[in-house]
Length: 128
Length: 229
Image 1 (tube, chains in turn cyan, orange):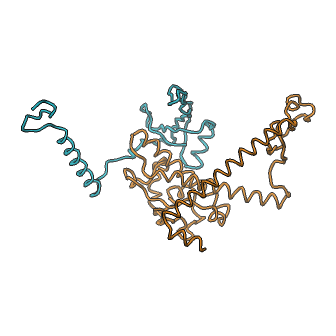
Image 2 (cartoon, chains in turn brown, purple):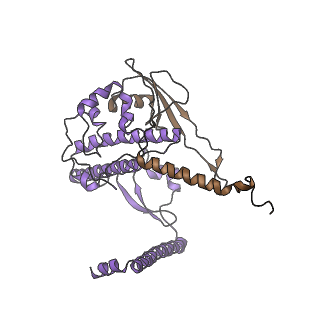
Image 3 (cartoon, one colour):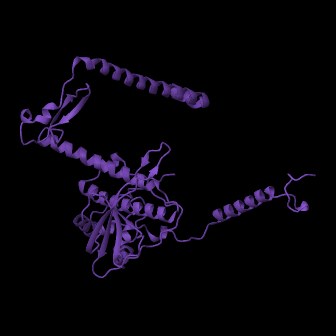
């Protein structure tokens, strides 16, 4: 079972999970209530079909796996907002110096590509 | 660099309730305060996410996975609790993985998933061993379901476990069509299969020997030590 950020905005008390295909609504309710102590008011499930359109280098169809989605409404008036798990953090000195180094290198590469500034940036292919 | 810090010197306190065990990352040497755990209880579903201090980090430190030898020394109660702790950790890591795919960012330390999976597999093995031992003492049988070795119509040997049927096998038309014997003309194919297996084994042994020789050539000083031992 994993919690998932909903693609479509859900009401505040609804949490979206991806669960095993064999789990029922009752199973999900018991799982959350006993293992996570989460008060569950309602559970709705649906099975998402994984597409079979993509093809690999042998032109064989590659199937994306099917999965079951559960929409759990929390009891006792609790709300849930999916948090931002990748907030911007201050880069430490190492990463900053690496970024500077990388930018300088890219600038040098670009300058090599350009033509002679004394000839107006025209490439050397043109005669004389 | 892996840190072998799981034990925390007998910190497996059996008085704790399963809820407070959840944020207990058993890899870490320092236990989080139980007070902060209770403060976080307002949002139960935080147990699907890591400690908020770790959000946005490039990598998260974690200890080694649980070894079978270490688990054999634990009581069944402890193994039961450890299983659920590992299950919650696995759910948390899977959530993080899916979210990282959604945000198109790299997941911090994906090796944690492998460690959790191997730990859970090892717990399963230990519990199975204990079940087999108990069954042997109580009934004298190793397996829960009786069975026997049989041949199939291609001459291959396999373990046939008995199933419960409502009618005896000699009245079962479909079962009688299955052949648990092979005719003499199959001996040729058994021989071919045997030769294939032998060839594969010989190839593996030769490859090992050549690899060892290459390494001995590259690092002669270490090779001399192993030969002397």
